Amino acid sequence: MVYRIPSPKVLEDSIRRVIREHQSIPSQRRFTELVLEDLKKKNPEYRVGEVRLRRMALLRNLARVTIQYRETRDMSRKGRCPVCSSPTEELHNMTLEDRTVELGFKCTKCPYWTGPRKRVPVRYIFTMQGDIVPPSKKKGRYAQWKFA
Ligand SMILES: [Zn+2]
Image (tube, rainbow, N blue to C red):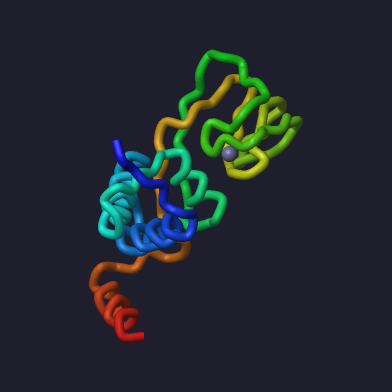
């Protein structure tokens, strides 16, 4: 199958457009679909993976990413972050999200953390940075950008 990997610049532009237009996207699957739709307007052969998209949104600060977790029965251990695949580091007595974590691991690049029982991400919500613009005002703002 013929496919192309978009460059970081092309991908970043697509993510910015999608986030600006939708403002809040309730799942990783939907986010990937929307970015892919946007990419395909440029080249129908573009492909992109969920992890690459999520990493870019997080690490380049293109969107606010809210991560919902499920706590498993497994012990957490050092390794790659399940959110962005960066290395993790050990935690001792840290306060995160208003909870004191005595032992666990934290990603070195993104907000992921886990206590002694391994937490796994179950849902990602992608939201625009800053205030959500109500649809009534959005129209005017878009028009302005168009002619800027
Ligand atoms: Zn991470």
